[in-house]
Amino acid sequence: MTTEFAIKQLLESRRMIDEIDSKLIEILDDRFRLTREVGLLKAEHKLDPIDKTREAEKLAKLRSLCDKKSLNPDFIEKLFSSIMEEVVKNHQSIDR
Image 1 (cartoon, rainbow, N blue to C red):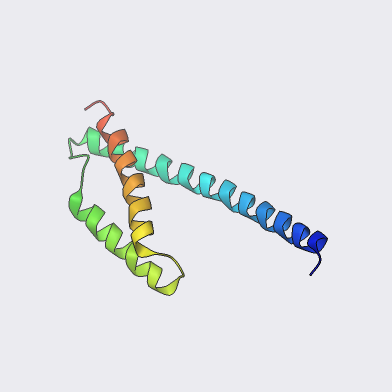
Image 2 (cartoon, one colour):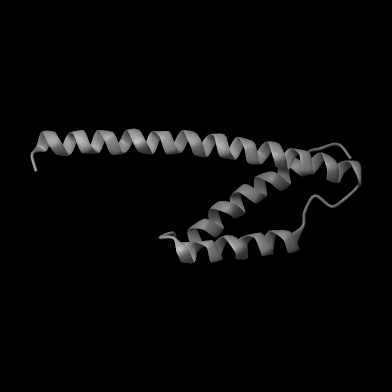
């Protein structure tokens, strides 16, 4: 394999990674838009912004999805825990 060919492959892989990153941002935006609606509903009905049972069930489900993929379940749990922490902060900031 020539260096020129390797560089072309590298650039193409990076372009594809950039596309995936853009899609991830779009998906996260969609997710946070929906969780904002959930937060407004919880606030309107005076429900607790934190649902530890839901969080635990969600993390367990996400970990199990990693079994069929080449993903580290500890990493996925950490990633989604961070996402859920941000959601809870957003829910807590809504006027009740």
